[in-house]
Image (cartoon, rainbow, N blue to C red):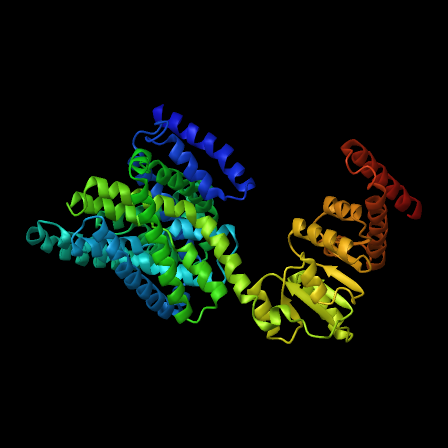
Length: 584
Protein backbone atom coordinates (compact mmCIF):
# COMPACT_ATOMS: atom_id res chain seq x y z
CA UNK A 1 0.00 0.00 0.00
CA UNK A 2 2.90 2.34 0.71
CA UNK A 3 4.23 1.86 -2.84
CA UNK A 4 0.73 2.45 -4.26
CA UNK A 5 0.41 5.63 -2.21
CA UNK A 6 3.79 6.93 -3.43
CA UNK A 7 2.92 6.03 -7.02
CA UNK A 8 -0.46 7.77 -6.81
CA UNK A 9 1.08 10.96 -5.40
CA UNK A 10 3.86 11.02 -8.02
CA UNK A 11 1.37 10.47 -10.86
CA UNK A 12 -1.01 13.11 -9.49
CA UNK A 13 1.76 15.69 -9.17
CA UNK A 14 2.96 14.90 -12.70
CA UNK A 15 -0.56 15.30 -14.12
CA UNK A 16 -0.78 18.80 -12.62
CA UNK A 17 2.80 20.11 -12.83
CA UNK A 18 4.02 18.89 -16.23
CA UNK A 19 1.20 20.43 -18.34
CA UNK A 20 1.60 23.63 -16.31
CA UNK A 21 5.33 23.81 -17.04
CA UNK A 22 4.63 23.05 -20.71
CA UNK A 23 2.09 25.86 -20.87
CA UNK A 24 4.62 28.25 -19.31
CA UNK A 25 7.14 27.27 -22.00
CA UNK A 26 9.53 25.62 -19.52
CA UNK A 27 9.25 22.08 -20.91
CA UNK A 28 8.21 18.80 -19.32
CA UNK A 29 11.66 17.95 -17.93
CA UNK A 30 11.72 20.92 -15.57
CA UNK A 31 8.24 19.96 -14.41
CA UNK A 32 9.41 16.48 -13.44
CA UNK A 33 12.53 17.89 -11.75
CA UNK A 34 10.47 20.35 -9.71
CA UNK A 35 8.20 17.54 -8.50
CA UNK A 36 11.26 15.53 -7.46
CA UNK A 37 12.86 18.38 -5.52
CA UNK A 38 9.56 19.17 -3.79
CA UNK A 39 8.76 15.58 -2.75
CA UNK A 40 12.36 14.55 -2.03
CA UNK A 41 14.00 14.21 1.38
CA UNK A 42 15.41 17.77 1.25
CA UNK A 43 12.00 19.49 1.34
CA UNK A 44 8.70 17.72 2.07
CA UNK A 45 10.37 14.33 2.53
CA UNK A 46 7.46 12.32 1.09
CA UNK A 47 10.03 10.10 -0.65
CA UNK A 48 12.74 9.25 1.88
CA UNK A 49 14.87 6.95 -0.30
CA UNK A 50 15.35 8.58 -3.72
CA UNK A 51 18.17 6.13 -4.55
CA UNK A 52 15.70 3.26 -4.74
CA UNK A 53 13.37 5.28 -6.98
CA UNK A 54 16.32 6.31 -9.18
CA UNK A 55 17.50 2.72 -9.55
CA UNK A 56 14.03 1.57 -10.62
CA UNK A 57 13.46 4.62 -12.85
CA UNK A 58 16.68 3.93 -14.76
CA UNK A 59 14.58 1.49 -16.76
CA UNK A 60 13.09 4.58 -18.43
CA UNK A 61 16.55 5.37 -19.83
CA UNK A 62 16.94 1.69 -20.72
CA UNK A 63 13.71 1.72 -22.72
CA UNK A 64 14.65 5.02 -24.36
CA UNK A 65 17.90 3.48 -25.62
CA UNK A 66 16.02 0.40 -26.82
CA UNK A 67 13.66 2.63 -28.82
CA UNK A 68 16.61 4.50 -30.29
CA UNK A 69 18.21 1.21 -31.25
CA UNK A 70 15.03 0.21 -33.08
CA UNK A 71 15.46 3.30 -35.25
CA UNK A 72 19.02 2.33 -36.22
CA UNK A 73 19.64 -0.59 -38.50
CA UNK A 74 23.11 -2.16 -38.13
CA UNK A 75 24.13 -0.80 -41.55
CA UNK A 76 23.17 2.74 -40.58
CA UNK A 77 25.07 2.38 -37.31
CA UNK A 78 28.12 1.24 -39.26
CA UNK A 79 27.79 4.27 -41.52
CA UNK A 80 27.96 6.47 -38.40
CA UNK A 81 31.23 4.92 -37.21
CA UNK A 82 33.48 7.86 -38.19
CA UNK A 83 31.23 10.47 -36.57
CA UNK A 84 30.78 8.19 -33.57
CA UNK A 85 34.49 7.67 -33.00
CA UNK A 86 35.69 11.12 -34.08
CA UNK A 87 33.18 13.42 -32.39
CA UNK A 88 32.67 11.14 -29.40
CA UNK A 89 36.30 10.56 -28.52
CA UNK A 90 37.27 14.22 -29.07
CA UNK A 91 34.44 15.40 -26.83
CA UNK A 92 35.21 12.92 -24.04
CA UNK A 93 38.98 13.49 -23.93
CA UNK A 94 38.91 17.27 -24.29
CA UNK A 95 36.05 17.79 -21.81
CA UNK A 96 37.71 15.37 -19.39
CA UNK A 97 41.00 17.30 -19.57
CA UNK A 98 39.31 20.68 -19.20
CA UNK A 99 37.22 19.56 -16.20
CA UNK A 100 40.10 17.87 -14.34
CA UNK A 101 40.98 21.17 -12.54
CA UNK A 102 37.47 21.10 -11.03
CA UNK A 103 38.46 17.93 -9.19
CA UNK A 104 41.70 19.51 -8.01
CA UNK A 105 39.71 22.52 -6.76
CA UNK A 106 37.55 20.13 -4.71
CA UNK A 107 40.65 18.69 -3.05
CA UNK A 108 41.22 15.48 -5.05
CA UNK A 109 44.58 14.09 -6.07
CA UNK A 110 45.42 14.29 -9.78
CA UNK A 111 44.39 10.69 -10.72
CA UNK A 112 41.03 10.99 -8.94
CA UNK A 113 40.55 14.51 -10.38
CA UNK A 114 41.17 13.15 -13.90
CA UNK A 115 38.60 10.40 -13.25
CA UNK A 116 36.08 13.01 -12.06
CA UNK A 117 36.78 15.08 -15.21
CA UNK A 118 35.94 12.07 -17.42
CA UNK A 119 32.79 11.36 -15.40
CA UNK A 120 31.63 14.98 -15.78
CA UNK A 121 32.37 14.78 -19.52
CA UNK A 122 29.40 12.42 -19.79
CA UNK A 123 26.06 14.00 -20.72
CA UNK A 124 22.50 12.91 -20.05
CA UNK A 125 21.12 10.75 -22.84
CA UNK A 126 17.61 11.05 -21.43
CA UNK A 127 17.71 14.84 -21.07
CA UNK A 128 19.42 15.60 -24.37
CA UNK A 129 17.19 13.36 -26.48
CA UNK A 130 14.05 14.56 -24.70
CA UNK A 131 14.98 18.20 -25.35
CA UNK A 132 15.72 17.45 -29.01
CA UNK A 133 12.48 15.49 -29.35
CA UNK A 134 10.35 18.26 -27.78
CA UNK A 135 11.91 20.77 -30.18
CA UNK A 136 11.66 18.37 -33.18
CA UNK A 137 15.41 18.59 -33.80
CA UNK A 138 16.44 14.91 -33.76
CA UNK A 139 16.83 14.77 -37.55
CA UNK A 140 18.92 17.97 -37.83
CA UNK A 141 22.72 17.90 -38.24
CA UNK A 142 23.26 18.85 -34.60
CA UNK A 143 20.64 16.30 -33.54
CA UNK A 144 22.47 13.51 -35.37
CA UNK A 145 25.83 14.65 -33.98
CA UNK A 146 24.33 14.73 -30.48
CA UNK A 147 23.18 11.16 -30.86
CA UNK A 148 26.62 10.01 -32.07
CA UNK A 149 28.35 11.64 -29.09
CA UNK A 150 25.83 10.24 -26.61
CA UNK A 151 26.22 6.76 -28.03
CA UNK A 152 30.01 7.00 -27.67
CA UNK A 153 29.56 8.16 -24.08
CA UNK A 154 27.35 5.15 -23.31
CA UNK A 155 30.09 2.93 -24.70
CA UNK A 156 32.67 4.82 -22.63
CA UNK A 157 30.84 3.92 -19.41
CA UNK A 158 32.12 0.33 -19.79
CA UNK A 159 35.87 1.13 -19.48
CA UNK A 160 35.19 3.81 -16.87
CA UNK A 161 33.41 1.30 -14.63
CA UNK A 162 36.12 -1.27 -15.26
CA UNK A 163 38.89 1.21 -14.45
CA UNK A 164 37.39 2.43 -11.16
CA UNK A 165 39.35 -0.14 -9.08
CA UNK A 166 42.62 1.27 -10.46
CA UNK A 167 41.91 4.53 -8.63
CA UNK A 168 40.98 2.85 -5.34
CA UNK A 169 43.27 2.56 -2.35
CA UNK A 170 43.22 -1.25 -2.58
CA UNK A 171 44.53 -1.13 -6.15
CA UNK A 172 46.72 -4.26 -5.94
CA UNK A 173 43.92 -6.43 -4.60
CA UNK A 174 41.34 -5.23 -7.10
CA UNK A 175 43.31 -4.98 -10.34
CA UNK A 176 42.65 -8.55 -11.35
CA UNK A 177 38.91 -8.29 -10.85
CA UNK A 178 38.90 -5.06 -12.88
CA UNK A 179 40.40 -6.65 -15.96
CA UNK A 180 38.33 -9.78 -15.43
CA UNK A 181 35.29 -7.51 -15.47
CA UNK A 182 36.34 -6.10 -18.85
CA UNK A 183 36.66 -9.62 -20.27
CA UNK A 184 33.31 -10.61 -18.78
CA UNK A 185 31.72 -7.50 -20.27
CA UNK A 186 33.06 -8.21 -23.76
CA UNK A 187 31.77 -11.76 -23.50
CA UNK A 188 28.31 -10.57 -22.45
CA UNK A 189 28.13 -8.06 -25.33
CA UNK A 190 29.00 -10.89 -27.75
CA UNK A 191 26.32 -13.08 -26.17
CA UNK A 192 23.69 -10.34 -26.49
CA UNK A 193 24.57 -9.88 -30.17
CA UNK A 194 24.28 -13.61 -30.91
CA UNK A 195 21.04 -14.14 -28.95
CA UNK A 196 19.49 -10.90 -30.26
CA UNK A 197 20.32 -11.80 -33.84
CA UNK A 198 19.29 -15.46 -33.93
CA UNK A 199 17.14 -16.37 -30.91
CA UNK A 200 14.92 -13.36 -30.09
CA UNK A 201 13.37 -13.02 -33.60
CA UNK A 202 12.28 -16.67 -33.41
CA UNK A 203 10.82 -16.11 -29.96
CA UNK A 204 8.87 -13.07 -31.19
CA UNK A 205 7.63 -15.03 -34.21
CA UNK A 206 6.26 -17.76 -31.94
CA UNK A 207 4.56 -15.19 -29.69
CA UNK A 208 3.12 -13.27 -32.67
CA UNK A 209 1.46 -16.44 -33.95
CA UNK A 210 -0.55 -16.66 -30.73
CA UNK A 211 -2.26 -13.37 -31.73
CA UNK A 212 -2.55 -12.39 -28.06
CA UNK A 213 -1.58 -8.73 -27.85
CA UNK A 214 -0.75 -8.63 -24.14
CA UNK A 215 1.63 -11.60 -24.49
CA UNK A 216 3.53 -9.75 -27.22
CA UNK A 217 3.75 -6.76 -24.87
CA UNK A 218 5.09 -9.09 -22.18
CA UNK A 219 7.64 -10.51 -24.64
CA UNK A 220 8.80 -7.01 -25.61
CA UNK A 221 9.26 -6.04 -21.96
CA UNK A 222 11.03 -9.34 -21.28
CA UNK A 223 13.55 -8.72 -24.07
CA UNK A 224 14.38 -5.22 -22.81
CA UNK A 225 14.48 -5.96 -19.09
CA UNK A 226 16.35 -9.27 -19.34
CA UNK A 227 19.02 -7.75 -21.59
CA UNK A 228 19.42 -4.81 -19.20
CA UNK A 229 19.69 -7.09 -16.15
CA UNK A 230 22.28 -9.31 -17.81
CA UNK A 231 24.39 -6.24 -18.60
CA UNK A 232 24.08 -4.99 -15.04
CA UNK A 233 25.05 -8.43 -13.75
CA UNK A 234 28.47 -8.13 -15.38
CA UNK A 235 28.83 -4.50 -14.28
CA UNK A 236 27.98 -2.81 -17.59
CA UNK A 237 25.45 -0.17 -18.62
CA UNK A 238 21.89 -1.51 -18.73
CA UNK A 239 21.09 1.14 -21.35
CA UNK A 240 23.88 -0.12 -23.61
CA UNK A 241 22.46 -3.64 -23.52
CA UNK A 242 19.00 -2.39 -24.41
CA UNK A 243 20.45 -0.31 -27.23
CA UNK A 244 22.23 -3.33 -28.70
CA UNK A 245 19.02 -5.36 -28.50
CA UNK A 246 17.14 -2.59 -30.29
CA UNK A 247 19.73 -2.33 -33.07
CA UNK A 248 19.63 -6.09 -33.64
CA UNK A 249 15.84 -6.03 -33.92
CA UNK A 250 15.68 -2.87 -36.05
CA UNK A 251 15.58 -4.70 -39.38
CA UNK A 252 13.01 -7.31 -38.32
CA UNK A 253 9.29 -7.27 -39.12
CA UNK A 254 8.50 -6.75 -35.43
CA UNK A 255 10.15 -3.33 -35.17
CA UNK A 256 7.01 -1.19 -35.22
CA UNK A 257 5.03 -3.55 -32.98
CA UNK A 258 7.85 -3.50 -30.41
CA UNK A 259 8.01 0.29 -30.58
CA UNK A 260 4.26 0.66 -30.02
CA UNK A 261 4.32 -1.70 -27.02
CA UNK A 262 7.34 -0.18 -25.28
CA UNK A 263 6.60 3.52 -25.86
CA UNK A 264 3.99 4.02 -23.04
CA UNK A 265 6.29 2.41 -20.46
CA UNK A 266 9.25 4.44 -21.70
CA UNK A 267 7.42 7.75 -21.30
CA UNK A 268 6.21 7.06 -17.75
CA UNK A 269 9.52 5.66 -16.52
CA UNK A 270 11.48 8.53 -18.05
CA UNK A 271 9.25 10.96 -16.19
CA UNK A 272 9.90 8.97 -12.99
CA UNK A 273 13.63 9.09 -13.71
CA UNK A 274 13.59 12.88 -14.00
CA UNK A 275 11.64 13.08 -10.73
CA UNK A 276 14.18 10.79 -9.04
CA UNK A 277 16.99 13.06 -10.23
CA UNK A 278 15.22 15.99 -8.59
CA UNK A 279 14.86 13.98 -5.37
CA UNK A 280 18.64 13.44 -5.34
CA UNK A 281 19.34 17.14 -4.84
CA UNK A 282 20.58 17.88 -1.31
CA UNK A 283 18.96 21.27 -0.82
CA UNK A 284 20.56 21.78 2.61
CA UNK A 285 24.04 21.22 1.16
CA UNK A 286 23.30 23.63 -1.69
CA UNK A 287 22.18 26.24 0.85
CA UNK A 288 25.29 25.67 2.98
CA UNK A 289 27.75 25.87 0.09
CA UNK A 290 25.92 27.72 -2.70
CA UNK A 291 29.04 29.24 -4.25
CA UNK A 292 30.73 25.85 -4.48
CA UNK A 293 27.71 24.24 -6.17
CA UNK A 294 27.13 27.18 -8.53
CA UNK A 295 30.85 27.41 -9.34
CA UNK A 296 31.01 23.71 -10.13
CA UNK A 297 27.84 23.95 -12.25
CA UNK A 298 29.20 26.91 -14.21
CA UNK A 299 32.59 25.24 -14.69
CA UNK A 300 30.85 22.09 -15.94
CA UNK A 301 28.54 23.84 -18.40
CA UNK A 302 30.88 26.57 -19.66
CA UNK A 303 33.73 24.11 -20.13
CA UNK A 304 31.59 21.67 -22.08
CA UNK A 305 30.02 24.40 -24.22
CA UNK A 306 33.45 25.73 -25.22
CA UNK A 307 34.88 22.30 -26.01
CA UNK A 308 31.84 20.92 -27.86
CA UNK A 309 31.38 24.10 -29.90
CA UNK A 310 35.03 23.82 -30.95
CA UNK A 311 34.63 20.12 -31.77
CA UNK A 312 31.48 20.86 -33.78
CA UNK A 313 33.18 23.59 -35.78
CA UNK A 314 36.19 21.34 -36.50
CA UNK A 315 33.68 18.73 -37.70
CA UNK A 316 32.43 21.40 -40.17
CA UNK A 317 29.13 22.10 -38.48
CA UNK A 318 27.80 25.60 -39.03
CA UNK A 319 27.68 27.86 -35.99
CA UNK A 320 23.88 27.60 -35.96
CA UNK A 321 24.33 23.83 -35.46
CA UNK A 322 27.48 23.76 -33.30
CA UNK A 323 26.01 26.01 -30.59
CA UNK A 324 22.82 23.94 -30.04
CA UNK A 325 24.98 20.80 -30.09
CA UNK A 326 27.11 22.21 -27.27
CA UNK A 327 24.10 23.48 -25.31
CA UNK A 328 22.15 20.22 -25.38
CA UNK A 329 25.23 18.30 -24.14
CA UNK A 330 26.38 20.85 -21.55
CA UNK A 331 24.80 19.07 -18.58
CA UNK A 332 26.05 16.12 -16.57
CA UNK A 333 24.56 12.70 -17.18
CA UNK A 334 22.56 9.99 -15.46
CA UNK A 335 25.61 7.73 -15.52
CA UNK A 336 27.39 10.33 -13.36
CA UNK A 337 25.19 9.14 -10.48
CA UNK A 338 26.18 5.52 -11.11
CA UNK A 339 29.91 6.24 -11.44
CA UNK A 340 30.02 8.66 -8.51
CA UNK A 341 28.23 6.17 -6.25
CA UNK A 342 30.55 3.37 -7.38
CA UNK A 343 33.55 5.67 -6.84
CA UNK A 344 32.34 6.50 -3.34
CA UNK A 345 31.94 2.77 -2.55
CA UNK A 346 35.51 2.21 -3.76
CA UNK A 347 36.79 4.98 -1.52
CA UNK A 348 37.79 7.32 -4.36
CA UNK A 349 35.24 10.05 -3.51
CA UNK A 350 33.81 10.97 -0.10
CA UNK A 351 30.13 11.57 0.71
CA UNK A 352 30.34 15.37 0.72
CA UNK A 353 32.11 15.61 -2.63
CA UNK A 354 29.67 13.14 -4.18
CA UNK A 355 26.67 15.16 -2.92
CA UNK A 356 28.17 18.42 -4.20
CA UNK A 357 28.81 16.98 -7.66
CA UNK A 358 25.36 15.35 -7.86
CA UNK A 359 23.75 18.70 -6.94
CA UNK A 360 25.79 20.49 -9.64
CA UNK A 361 24.91 17.83 -12.23
CA UNK A 362 21.20 18.17 -11.40
CA UNK A 363 21.34 21.97 -11.66
CA UNK A 364 23.06 21.64 -15.05
CA UNK A 365 20.21 19.38 -16.20
CA UNK A 366 17.63 21.95 -15.07
CA UNK A 367 19.45 24.68 -17.00
CA UNK A 368 19.73 22.67 -20.23
CA UNK A 369 16.31 23.52 -21.80
CA UNK A 370 16.90 27.26 -21.29
CA UNK A 371 20.48 27.11 -22.57
CA UNK A 372 19.42 25.09 -25.63
CA UNK A 373 16.65 27.51 -26.52
CA UNK A 374 19.02 30.48 -26.24
CA UNK A 375 21.77 28.71 -28.21
CA UNK A 376 19.41 28.01 -31.11
CA UNK A 377 18.28 31.64 -31.25
CA UNK A 378 21.80 33.02 -30.86
CA UNK A 379 23.27 30.65 -33.46
CA UNK A 380 20.51 31.44 -35.94
CA UNK A 381 21.00 35.18 -35.36
CA UNK A 382 24.75 34.90 -36.01
CA UNK A 383 24.09 32.96 -39.20
CA UNK A 384 21.63 35.67 -40.19
CA UNK A 385 24.47 38.19 -40.38
CA UNK A 386 25.67 36.70 -43.65
CA UNK A 387 25.10 38.98 -46.67
CA UNK A 388 22.21 37.19 -48.30
CA UNK A 389 20.12 36.92 -45.13
CA UNK A 390 19.14 40.56 -44.96
CA UNK A 391 20.29 41.77 -48.36
CA UNK A 392 17.27 40.93 -50.48
CA UNK A 393 18.62 42.71 -53.57
CA UNK A 394 16.90 45.31 -55.75
CA UNK A 395 14.34 43.02 -57.35
CA UNK A 396 10.88 43.13 -55.75
CA UNK A 397 8.77 40.19 -57.04
CA UNK A 398 4.99 40.55 -56.99
CA UNK A 399 4.50 37.67 -54.51
CA UNK A 400 5.85 37.18 -50.99
CA UNK A 401 5.69 33.74 -49.35
CA UNK A 402 6.09 33.44 -45.58
CA UNK A 403 6.93 29.86 -44.63
CA UNK A 404 8.53 27.52 -47.13
CA UNK A 405 7.51 24.08 -45.88
CA UNK A 406 5.43 21.59 -47.85
CA UNK A 407 2.44 23.95 -48.17
CA UNK A 408 4.44 27.00 -49.28
CA UNK A 409 6.66 25.02 -51.64
CA UNK A 410 3.71 23.53 -53.54
CA UNK A 411 2.25 26.98 -54.24
CA UNK A 412 5.70 28.30 -55.16
CA UNK A 413 6.26 25.53 -57.69
CA UNK A 414 2.96 26.38 -59.40
CA UNK A 415 4.00 30.03 -59.61
CA UNK A 416 7.37 29.00 -61.00
CA UNK A 417 5.78 27.00 -63.84
CA UNK A 418 4.09 30.25 -64.97
CA UNK A 419 7.22 32.37 -64.69
CA UNK A 420 5.83 34.36 -61.75
CA UNK A 421 8.63 35.53 -59.46
CA UNK A 422 8.37 35.35 -55.69
CA UNK A 423 10.43 35.94 -52.55
CA UNK A 424 10.20 33.30 -49.82
CA UNK A 425 11.01 33.94 -46.15
CA UNK A 426 11.62 31.18 -43.61
CA UNK A 427 13.06 31.27 -40.04
CA UNK A 428 14.60 27.78 -40.33
CA UNK A 429 18.23 28.23 -41.40
CA UNK A 430 18.61 24.52 -42.27
CA UNK A 431 15.60 24.70 -44.58
CA UNK A 432 16.92 27.91 -46.18
CA UNK A 433 20.34 26.40 -46.84
CA UNK A 434 18.78 23.30 -48.39
CA UNK A 435 16.24 25.05 -50.64
CA UNK A 436 18.75 27.64 -51.91
CA UNK A 437 20.68 24.79 -53.54
CA UNK A 438 17.82 24.48 -56.04
CA UNK A 439 17.96 28.13 -57.05
CA UNK A 440 14.85 29.34 -55.21
CA UNK A 441 14.78 32.94 -54.01
CA UNK A 442 14.48 32.19 -50.29
CA UNK A 443 15.95 34.10 -47.35
CA UNK A 444 16.48 33.49 -43.67
CA UNK A 445 14.02 35.91 -42.08
CA UNK A 446 11.26 36.17 -39.48
CA UNK A 447 8.19 37.29 -41.44
CA UNK A 448 6.54 38.74 -38.33
CA UNK A 449 9.12 41.56 -38.27
CA UNK A 450 7.94 44.54 -40.30
CA UNK A 451 11.47 45.78 -41.09
CA UNK A 452 12.38 42.44 -42.70
CA UNK A 453 9.14 42.43 -44.70
CA UNK A 454 9.92 45.95 -45.89
CA UNK A 455 13.47 44.88 -46.86
CA UNK A 456 12.02 41.91 -48.75
CA UNK A 457 9.89 44.24 -50.87
CA UNK A 458 6.50 44.09 -49.13
CA UNK A 459 5.80 47.73 -50.04
CA UNK A 460 5.99 46.90 -53.76
CA UNK A 461 4.55 43.37 -53.74
CA UNK A 462 0.95 42.65 -54.70
CA UNK A 463 0.17 39.39 -52.93
CA UNK A 464 1.43 37.64 -49.81
CA UNK A 465 0.94 33.95 -49.04
CA UNK A 466 1.28 33.13 -45.33
CA UNK A 467 2.01 29.40 -45.14
CA UNK A 468 3.80 28.89 -41.82
CA UNK A 469 3.05 25.81 -39.69
CA UNK A 470 2.39 27.54 -36.37
CA UNK A 471 -1.12 29.03 -36.00
CA UNK A 472 -0.04 31.70 -33.49
CA UNK A 473 2.83 32.81 -35.70
CA UNK A 474 0.43 32.96 -38.66
CA UNK A 475 -1.89 35.27 -36.74
CA UNK A 476 1.04 37.46 -35.67
CA UNK A 477 2.28 37.81 -39.25
CA UNK A 478 -1.21 38.69 -40.48
CA UNK A 479 -1.55 41.40 -37.82
CA UNK A 480 1.80 42.89 -38.82
CA UNK A 481 0.94 42.88 -42.52
CA UNK A 482 -2.53 44.36 -41.98
CA UNK A 483 -1.03 47.21 -39.92
CA UNK A 484 2.10 47.95 -41.94
CA UNK A 485 1.21 46.86 -45.50
CA UNK A 486 -2.58 47.06 -45.87
CA UNK A 487 -2.34 47.10 -49.67
CA UNK A 488 -1.17 43.46 -49.77
CA UNK A 489 -3.76 40.90 -50.80
CA UNK A 490 -3.43 38.13 -48.22
CA UNK A 491 -3.81 34.40 -48.88
CA UNK A 492 -3.43 32.64 -45.53
CA UNK A 493 -3.08 29.02 -44.52
CA UNK A 494 -5.47 28.23 -41.64
CA UNK A 495 -4.97 25.39 -39.20
CA UNK A 496 -8.68 24.60 -38.88
CA UNK A 497 -12.15 26.15 -38.93
CA UNK A 498 -11.67 28.14 -35.71
CA UNK A 499 -8.31 29.47 -36.88
CA UNK A 500 -10.00 30.48 -40.14
CA UNK A 501 -12.55 32.53 -38.18
CA UNK A 502 -9.73 34.14 -36.19
CA UNK A 503 -8.10 35.20 -39.46
CA UNK A 504 -11.41 36.45 -40.84
CA UNK A 505 -11.69 38.68 -37.75
CA UNK A 506 -8.45 40.31 -38.91
CA UNK A 507 -9.98 41.01 -42.32
CA UNK A 508 -8.42 38.16 -44.32
CA UNK A 509 -10.68 37.31 -47.26
CA UNK A 510 -8.72 34.40 -48.76
CA UNK A 511 -8.39 31.74 -46.05
CA UNK A 512 -7.22 28.27 -47.09
CA UNK A 513 -7.75 25.49 -44.58
CA UNK A 514 -4.63 23.34 -44.87
CA UNK A 515 -6.26 19.88 -45.23
CA UNK A 516 -9.57 21.01 -46.73
CA UNK A 517 -8.94 20.40 -50.44
CA UNK A 518 -7.18 17.07 -49.91
CA UNK A 519 -10.04 15.91 -47.64
CA UNK A 520 -12.59 16.74 -50.33
CA UNK A 521 -10.51 14.87 -52.89
CA UNK A 522 -10.36 11.86 -50.58
CA UNK A 523 -14.13 12.01 -50.12
CA UNK A 524 -14.55 11.97 -53.90
CA UNK A 525 -12.31 8.89 -54.19
CA UNK A 526 -14.25 7.14 -51.40
CA UNK A 527 -17.57 7.67 -53.20
CA UNK A 528 -16.15 6.31 -56.46
CA UNK A 529 -14.81 3.28 -54.58
CA UNK A 530 -18.33 2.73 -53.19
CA UNK A 531 -19.69 2.49 -56.77
CA UNK A 532 -20.76 6.08 -57.44
CA UNK A 533 -20.28 7.22 -61.06
CA UNK A 534 -17.43 9.76 -61.28
CA UNK A 535 -19.77 12.58 -62.33
CA UNK A 536 -22.16 11.85 -59.46
CA UNK A 537 -19.30 11.76 -56.93
CA UNK A 538 -17.93 15.05 -58.23
CA UNK A 539 -21.38 16.64 -57.98
CA UNK A 540 -21.78 15.48 -54.34
CA UNK A 541 -18.38 16.89 -53.39
CA UNK A 542 -19.05 20.15 -55.24
CA UNK A 543 -22.38 20.61 -53.44
CA UNK A 544 -20.78 19.81 -50.09
CA UNK A 545 -18.00 22.30 -50.74
CA UNK A 546 -20.45 25.07 -51.59
CA UNK A 547 -22.48 24.29 -48.46
CA UNK A 548 -19.37 24.24 -46.24
CA UNK A 549 -18.02 27.50 -47.68
CA UNK A 550 -21.38 29.13 -47.04
CA UNK A 551 -21.47 27.76 -43.49
CA UNK A 552 -17.95 29.02 -42.79
CA UNK A 553 -19.09 32.56 -43.57
CA UNK A 554 -22.59 32.37 -42.07
CA UNK A 555 -21.35 30.76 -38.82
CA UNK A 556 -18.74 33.47 -38.42
CA UNK A 557 -21.24 35.60 -36.49
CA UNK A 558 -22.09 32.70 -34.15
CA UNK A 559 -18.55 31.41 -33.73
CA UNK A 560 -18.65 31.90 -29.94
CA UNK A 561 -22.03 30.18 -29.52
CA UNK A 562 -21.62 26.35 -29.58
CA UNK A 563 -25.37 25.66 -29.56
CA UNK A 564 -25.95 27.90 -32.57
CA UNK A 565 -23.11 26.19 -34.43
CA UNK A 566 -24.57 22.73 -33.77
CA UNK A 567 -28.03 23.87 -34.91
CA UNK A 568 -26.55 25.43 -38.07
CA UNK A 569 -24.60 22.26 -38.91
CA UNK A 570 -27.67 20.06 -38.51
CA UNK A 571 -29.90 22.29 -40.62
CA UNK A 572 -27.26 22.58 -43.36
CA UNK A 573 -26.87 18.80 -43.52
CA UNK A 574 -30.65 18.30 -43.72
CA UNK A 575 -30.82 20.89 -46.51
CA UNK A 576 -28.08 19.05 -48.41
CA UNK A 577 -29.91 15.73 -48.04
CA UNK A 578 -33.16 17.27 -49.33
CA UNK A 579 -31.26 18.73 -52.30
CA UNK A 580 -29.95 15.34 -53.40
CA UNK A 581 -33.28 13.59 -52.73
CA UNK A 582 -34.93 16.14 -55.06
CA UNK A 583 -32.28 15.60 -57.72
CA UNK A 584 -32.50 11.84 -57.34
